[in-house]
Amino acid sequence: MLNGSSGVGKTTIAKMLSKKEGVEWIHPDGLWDPSMDQRASTFKATELAVTEHKHADIVVIDMQFRHQFMLDAFDEYGVTIGKQVLLYCNTPDREYRLRARGLEEDVIATMEH
Image 1 (cartoon, rainbow, N blue to C red):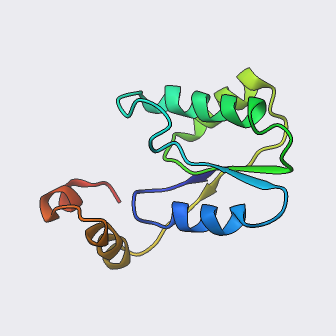
Image 2 (cartoon, rainbow, N blue to C red):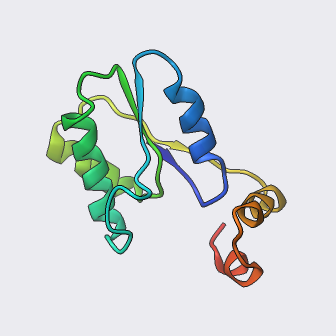
């Protein structure tokens, strides 16, 4: 699971990894209701990994989540091998990426680092 603030590069890295043979990518944006809370989203992504992507060698999940939610979801769905990679980039680079996405300055200013 790739974790980190918006704009740190989760999707960029997930896209690169998904080009490798045996690697599949779950990108939750657009897959389910955006009002779903973070715990429910983590469980939904894990469920997809073990049901619809069970034939893959590696499933990369690209989202923001709390570490405990991942552990709980892995326990619920019987995932015995899993990792969290927490991504970080410096604030100017992250803000540049968010501007490139078209986010307004006041939105960027309120986002947690």
